[in-house]
Image 1 (cartoon, one colour):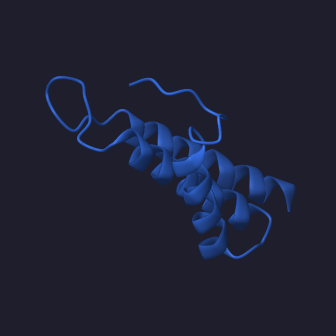
Image 2 (cartoon, rainbow, N blue to C red):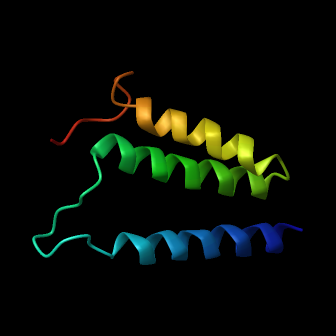
Length: 81
């Protein structure tokens, strides 16, 4: 069971790393707002964790998206813009 969970998490991390290499425009910037980027990352992370612990993936994604979007407002992550 642990090997399966490790494979799932490794696969998800590889997918995230591959998507992070993509740029939206030619100048190195992104067309998404920083809050939207953090929300998308949080949703993905929440879904992966929920799937790894056999929880509800939709609920994990929702909680992760909310946490990602609001982390700078709560002072957890730093603003870089």
